[in-house]
Length: 240
Length: 240
DNA sequence: GTCACGAGTGAACACCGTTTACCAGTCCAG
DNA sequence: CTGGACTGGTAAACGGTGTTCACTCGTGAC
Image (cartoon, rainbow over all chains, first blue to last red; front, side, top):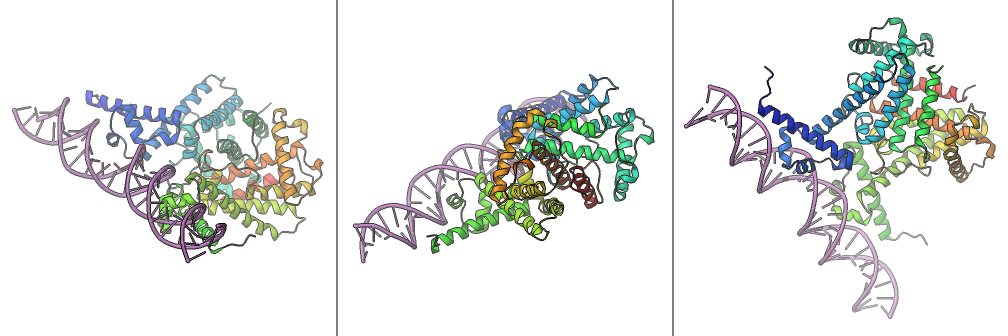
């Protein structure tokens, strides 16, 4: 049924080469250099040929973005595999550092995926993208194995309870898919609320660094990040 | 001396119209739509004419960023004017809420000024832009009038001391320009460090809301923001 | 052997930023 | 009052872009 004729294989090869060349251009010369004509030039074909494989440049860029996200997720996954399963704090650190490193290496992709006004181009960054899954999986592991510092349910603003509860449902679904079956008690509302706060600070730190919007020139951004990360970890009770 | 001949006035008018039209395009059709030819078209002139007023598109975009910051600052300034000078916590709240409200109302401007990779369009967001001044002025007032919760100098990572010290110098200069003359002791390194952390969280919260990148659908974003703001205020010792 | 199909081509269209040469006024000095 | 300098504008052009369309031409299937 799914036999690949020589024709199909050739098509897949071309498809793959387009993405490879596009990514090469992106990495080496920045997003502005990713141009249909440049890709075609590099491949020894003409620009309109690419339309046999992608509906538009925008389409290609999104595909590229997804490729990169997938690769990052894989990268993080192998990083995580090297960490003892019980050492959940180390896993959190690895994911956070990986996220930052990726963002700095791919500011355009970061910008596209995480800092674009909704309703245009930007793919919906829901929990289903590989990146988000890694994040949530680690969060799940942490909650399953450690007692975190989190506000009691009654301390969480009542108006947010519904949203947080819904988040918890989606979270459970995602975690179940990755094979993690957790008892419900490890996910009080405070846990999701804490995850939210964690994300706000991690995102803020990374975005400000990527966009160069700290209020002053930071000569040691690595250290600033590590400092923030340590503080954040301590605050959610991830240390000790 | 500074008499404006008819010629000068006409020049200023044109200058102003260029910026106005550029901004209109930005707001209505996004950053990609801000092009010299589109601006010229809208104005009934030709594109090269704009080069009499701006060295390049890049240059124009930077000017645009500055205009945007100026407007934001003016908005915040009128908000602040309605608050008693001694009530510095209320001023902080006003600036934070004003920043968020502005960002939600002007996502394109926010995106351009606060969430664009450097090196294209986005100017170095230093302390000299009007928005930064407002922020720092309020911070200065707070530090001058209240005892905040902040880490002692020796608790601030040593590697950041240089950057923070330099920030403090720039901060002093800015505050002096706005007529605030502060004793040096109100600005330990911990103070600038705390300001930095404050900015990270405020920015993260606002950007995530503007870009719709919270990990779940938030049905009551106002309350989420207020919750975050209250927590933040408490954390830096701004309440009570 | 024919025929459909699909990857690739070339020309064309409508844009873009930018440069250049030129033109028509205005202003001012002699 | 007149000639030159300056200034804001134009048209044309260059090299680049995404995209469309009519067209080949080799391949696979019948």
